[in-house]
Length: 332
Image 1: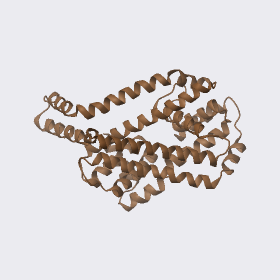
Image 2: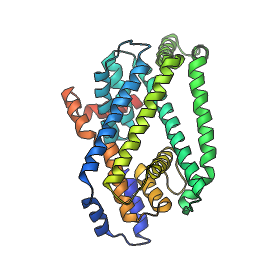
Image 3: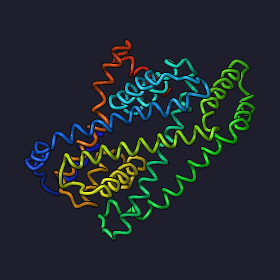
Image 4: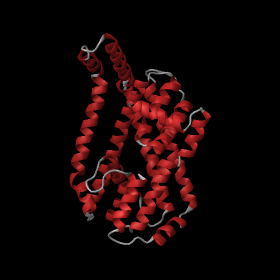
């Protein structure tokens, strides 16, 4: 992410100047009280994620340990900040070990979590898109594609994700049987192993069959994004003059979430780069201020948890190398 921001700044600097003094003043002029207050909701998101994951676990373990799941969640997000994509798999692996359930089942829970997060991100973006379209704001060339294609992409992705959820809910057993039958060509030992993996994966999807569990997961997902919005709201107050209203905060959050999911032509991925583009082209913020705000947002939402995660990892006998090994082995 930092590399993406560096590339973007380099491309901008080749076209126009960058007032480093203004960027420095924007950071030094931060309101510390609001900055500290923003940590409360962003740290609260990790507890919300742990509570939601406990719902995924209940079909296999009726009384999951919230403290253990929370610890694995914090360590897992620390691994993501340190190692990128391979770190995604540290959390389901640690939860499986701590709760003594099959690792495959927790990869299934991770997929469910991704689906609900994507649905919430798409809903927030749909709100942002409706507000921008209704206001008639003129955007720059880099966001024209988002306005032109955003609604269609949101609709298509939402339909796809809902089909996935319905498949997990109503057709998991037939899918399990079909996959098991399709792998009959494997030698007996490998087929038995594949059959076990498929069974544990389907077991991890069991929570989708309960109306109460789905409702709980949805409510925890809403809570998650409310807390993220609260963090952004606090950051907007800590950095005055960037986002002036709650609607502005939600529009910013929606576009940034969408940009992080979809590789926007001319922008690509990376939360920081997308944040700078949205602030400069949609809200008319100067590049220097937009860059400072984007970096601050990234730091608080991704990096602030790292010291706590490292402390918990060391407490549990994990170090840098073991976390990286877990992530790499899980990907393979």
